[in-house]
Image (cartoon, rainbow, N blue to C red; front, side, top):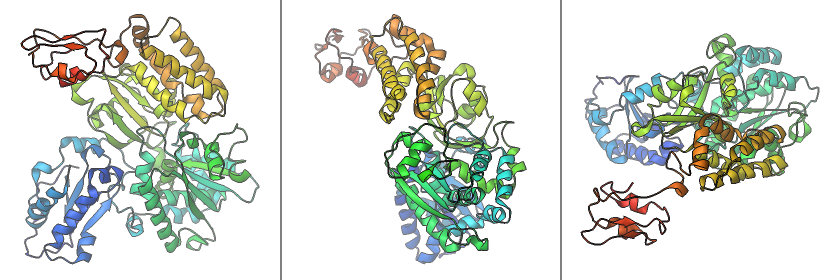
Length: 603
């Protein structure tokens, strides 16, 4: 939204803040950037003007994640519905914003967000994130004011069958990984004649660089609760669990506040809003095991057992938590349900593609200018995400690849940048939607090293129950590590491909079945880099230390001696008024000389 050029002034000596709102991003990213101190500074500055605390507290509000995390702390100043957004706000800037903008009506232009901020947001289609940066996540009345719990009211006025049919008609697919149709999963569970059933919200978000579920919970926890209650009603469950890692303290705190408020309002508990339907929600904190994102491992953890998956069938919808029929949906899936119920399946299914309906939230990270959280319609191209929203690679570097689906996904090269982002297209190219992590890589990224990095993660996170995952992935990592250490040999690539396919076919759960994806996709699209490492003994990206050769150009060297002083291995020889020289047999390739040279003489 373009910033307003004219903001009404508040001219009285003791201004009334009735028409003024100051919104501060207080998601995890905002807090890390200092938003709590920024809020205190606004409170202090307004108190100094003899304003009552009640007025100040109503004026200054918190929000969840605003999306463009690279610009935190983000602050909105809204005067008579005219909004101005400031970026990189710190406590010192708060005083000037109050004085010049709020009191005198003149926005501080040099701190106002630029065109890239508006391009970042205007290129999105926000459904779930629409309110995350707008409302106070700890105020249930703020959620109700924007239509919260109306979807629940509508659902409870219908039969469970009608609710399931509405969700099926919407085309919503699970946003946690494989994309199984949500309404169909509910239907399978409802078919069971067992009286006791359970619903689980999977908030165990373990992908490196992923923070979609955390942001939704921190910014709008009631949307998740409302979705859970509707889902419980649709499948005949009276008890729900939110399985969330203990590493998310802010999300857990806001969930507790939201559950308590919803209970007081009659949305959770006995006879919900006079419908006769009972539903309770409990929080179960996990220890942060990546494998517990798999539904049967998650169920075992809730039961107090070690988080290890079991073979399927039987699937949880027929035999899940404590042997009872159980539906496991992730945060994003459940937060979508209230919107479908209130806006209708026809409206929701009009967004996206024929087989991939609606929007998807992605955590956009890596070598890209605009990092943050985005929500886009399924079917959007990678080019639009990376360039229109992300602003392209940082430092003017060339885009090389993007990893979708987290450590279990695949690397997609520049030659496929115009492909649509949907379940089918990503699967065809050897990647996956996953929970929504999206890591952008530029020309300085080594694809062999990237595959090794993700294999290191999945190897460490394997529960060890099945042999293919426990030993197979470890063997993949060992071969990749050997290649990056300059010890690759003929036949390594073929062995990697063969072993990776065997692991995918024979592993017990989704972790093992998808862990080889980064290896398979990087060999498929960047085989030349593997061959360069093995046969030419070089890393094209210059990342792998074993292949580095440091040279000093005597024509550029200013004979300052800084490289000599920085080298701890005695590999640099230098005398006053003489160019320095590196002895390769002593060089440990630490890069210290390269880092300290101010003249670019070392290459």
